[in-house]
Every structure is written in C-alpha cells, then in structure tokens.
Image: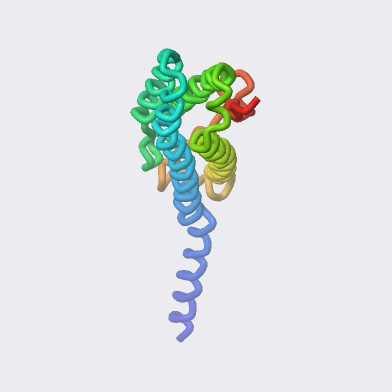
Amino acid sequence: MKYHFTKILFVGMAALSLSACGINSVPTEEEAVKAAWADVENQYQRRADLIPNLVETVKGFAQQEEDVLTSVTEARAKATSVNIDASGIDLTDASKVQQFQQAQDGISKALSGMRVISERYPELRSNENFLQLQNQLEGTENRIAVARRDYNQAVQQYNTTIRTFPDAIGAKVIHGAQPMVPFKATTENAEEAPKIDLTS
C-alpha cells in the first residue's frame, strides 16, 4: 500500500513538474498566436474583397482616372498573393512577415489616391454605393487595427513564455520554439488608418 501511494505521488509530482516546464503552455500560446494571425488575415481579406466594388463604383464617375484605379487593383493583387504559413513557421521569419506588411501597406497607399478622385468628382461623394463602400472600408481599417493589436499581444505572451523559466525548458528541449515576429509599422504615419474618408 505504501509503495502504491509513493507511485501515485511520484506520478503526480512528475506531471506537475512537466506542466510547469512549458509542455502545455507553449503549444497553447502558439495556437493563440496562430488564431490571432488568422484574424489579421481575415480582416485584410475583407478589405481586399471590398476593393473591386469600390473600383467599379469609382470607374463610373472617373473613367479618365485609370492610373489610380489601376494602382489600387494592382496593389490588391500583390497583397493577396503574399501569404503567411499559418502553421507558425513563417511567423518566426521576420522577412516574410515584413513582405506581408509591405504588400498590405501598398493597398493603403493606393487607396489614398481615391481621395483625389473624389475631390474632382463631387457627385461621387454623394453616391450611395460609394458611401456604403467607404463606410465598410473605414470599419475594416478599424478591425485590422484591432486584429493586429490582438496578434501582437499574443506574440508578446508567447515570446515571453518561451524565454522565461520554467517554460523555457520545454520550449527549447521539447518544442524547439522560436520567437514569433510581431506586426510592426513599416510606413510613415502607419499608426493611422489610410485616409479613405473621401467626403472632404
């Protein structure tokens, strides 16, 4: 009976010590980072899905503004072709995350060209479809900001876990964990959403 109790106690202590060494916490937080990144991608995809409708609406009013419309379309195509492997491998590669960010920044810059078009065509600013698309894009930019913030918080928690004792033991020895890359501003005034309020 004493041997049986000792065995149970040993198993319990071993499980407790393993749980304190990142066996469960590291993969749990890695999955949280992946989920947060999926939300970032989802919000960028929502923006990309709205852009063709915006371009078509503007085309009806501003046929000669082909350069701006082309740049928006090309920026969208480029941004949707740059993907991050959600398994987490690419999230540890700073150059891949930066490439993704730069492609998304290209859309933001291209959308700012729409402001000039709306200033030249006052009737466009009062078009109901245009106003609805503009409002949806503004809402999407806010969602993108929230998703990036949530992703960065998840990355911070994960990176802290894999670097601090005792979770660092399991992170290195068992999981081979690498720090993940947070989302960083890559453009001037990137903390501001692109100026898509075209009613000025």
